[in-house]
Length: 203
Length: 177
Image (cartoon, rainbow over the protein chains, first blue to last red):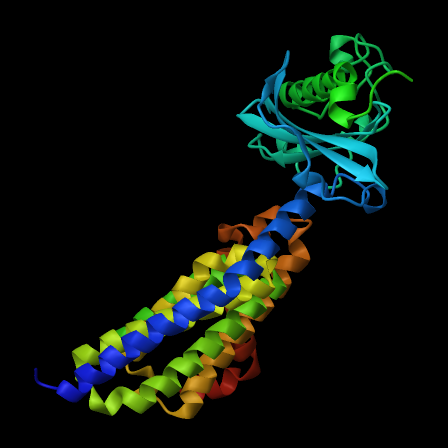
């Protein structure tokens, strides 16, 4: 070796560098994981007003295997509670849009009324169907307060299909897919209310 | 202006267009870059004389990756939301430090020249970040990479026009080197 002193410095630097990196990693893993969890919760739970729950809904899955419905697939469901009473059920729904799959989070209160819909993932046409993204979303808010019974099944369609809902301009396929997924989720909730909220349906 | 300078300045374009879509992100990346670059300069100053040029490059790589990785981990631990759009550019910081070291930035240039590079880069990052965030809500193109290029071009053009308007007579009489 031409420069033994230099090699020694290099070895020392490499040792120090790997040691520092290892220690930093060791020290931050816990925090990073907690941050990641918090961020995931935040994006998911935006759909629920914070006053509505006091538990960790994502830690309370009500079912884990996906359920295939008429127009969509439910990927998961979570229960939000307040003072020990069920206050909302969150359903993660996947539907087929115009460009690809759309993932929605549908929040339903214990009486079967829709609390909110949020788009988690979409790849629709920018400027047209992509208007389903973003939060809060004006078009998705038109579903808030609706339930399986009101309107009835024939009303749960776009005006173009003799229903009562407006569509997004120039994005009939996307609008229809989202609407049907929301309707599917409400229908599923109605049929599995007891199982989802953990309350026996004898009232 | 020799070749390594062109390379390092070209490298600065990457985050200038890629990471400046929000003011906070641009500011954070500039601060991280400045911090890592200073630490790199200081640490290399301690060992530079005792290394051959090949060893110097190796040492610069080890130092830059260590600094960038540790800074990245710390930002993740305290501001993950901020880090996510910047994650790609943390690696770029290491690359930029190595390129600057290799180009003799810490040895050949004076302190003033170094400060000028840091200052100009910071000024551009912050103004681009501010402009893009300001008009991005109404004009989505501004948030995409092509929009970043166009705005950077407009900024440079504005500077050219301003310096030309400020001293038209002196420019004609005594062309600067």
